[in-house]
Structure formats: C-alpha cells, structure tokens
Length: 263
Image (cartoon, rainbow, N blue to C red):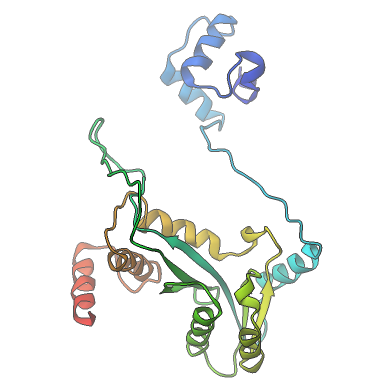
C-alpha cells in the first residue's frame, strides 16, 4: 500500500496530486484495504515517513567556469583562511509596501485578512546584507537604489567593522555593479578578496538560507504602510537573530524604548 502515495497519480487516477480522501477511495476501490479512516491513513503514512511536502525548483548553471568557482567557494567554506574573515553578501528585496500572506495559529474561520492592492505607489527599497560566518551574524543596510555607489558605501562600512590586518574573503554574485572598477580598486587596496558565485547558482551563497528566515519572521503575514515601519521590523528581527535582544516581553519593551530614543 505504501507504494501508492509515491506512485504517479496521473497514471492511477488521472489527477496531478493525491489527497487523503482520494488515496483512501483508491485503496478501498482497489480492495487494498476493506476500509480505513482518514486519521488512521494519515498516521500510517507518517509512521512510514511519508508526509505532505512542497515540490522545489532547480535551475542548472550555464556558467562555463562553474566547477572552478564552485570548488573555490567550497574550499573557503570548509576552512577559514589564516588571518581572514569569511563573509557572504547579497541583496534582499526589492522591498515593496504591499500586503504579504503568511501562516499563523488561528481558530477555524478566524484567520487574518489583508487588503488587496492593485497599484503600489510607495516605491521600493533594497537591503544590502552580509553574513559573517565566524561571528554568525547577519547585518544589513537599506538603500533606495542598487548600484555601485551604494554597494561601495556598504563595503566601506563592512571594512570598518574589522581589524585592518584581517583579510575579508567575500562570497557574492557577479552583478554588474559588483564588477565596477571603483569597487574592484577599493577591494584590492583594502585587503578584500571576492569569490564569485557561478551564474544561476545563488544557492551556493550561504546568506540565502538566512534571508529565508528573515522573510518568514519579519515580512510574512504583514501589511506595512511605510518603509520606515518595514525597516524597523527587519532591524528588530536582526537584533534578535544576532542575540542582542531576547524574545521576552520585557526585553521587547526595552528594545522599543531604546529605538525611540535613537529616533
């Protein structure tokens, strides 16, 4: 029976996916079992580690230099260079002002509803983010435009956060503004080494998994009405993520008071 959920439903019942109801009806009709409840069927599948899962996409890289780049980055990940720091950089966004769906604990029939938007006039923002593998911290700065000027300013900001003698080994993609002469010149003069992600291989950048959590806990199920409000929510998550505040109510109140004083 356990072969059935993994079998193509198109061949067996002419539909693209199974459901518990359809699976039960098929098993009974085929006389695999005389009868079975939906709950017992669910538990039986779970016992055999068969669960409802989302499918995933995969995009092959067409970069002719994929393997040399891949191996160079994997070597960096496997061992910290002597006297160096390993950073992963990428852009998070674009950050629109829009309602975002999400999941929540709620009673049946009481889930939140968000407004519908047909036009968005609030412009967009972008977050330039950096993940430090040694410190296990995620930081970011918000910009109106992604270009070499804003990226170079972010790079200088990062460089000031480390000792002059340390070499920054940075993993990032080969976006056009990352390759700007002014950016490469600054990196060469300030002990910064770039490790370029192969084309269509963003999964190789370890910051991506941290962006997934950031999106879930700061953006899912929200409807921010200003960029300031949205950015404060992201900063709040980063503060918790980097262990500079606890998740308790009292610590949250203290964090809010401190933010008001800064503003």
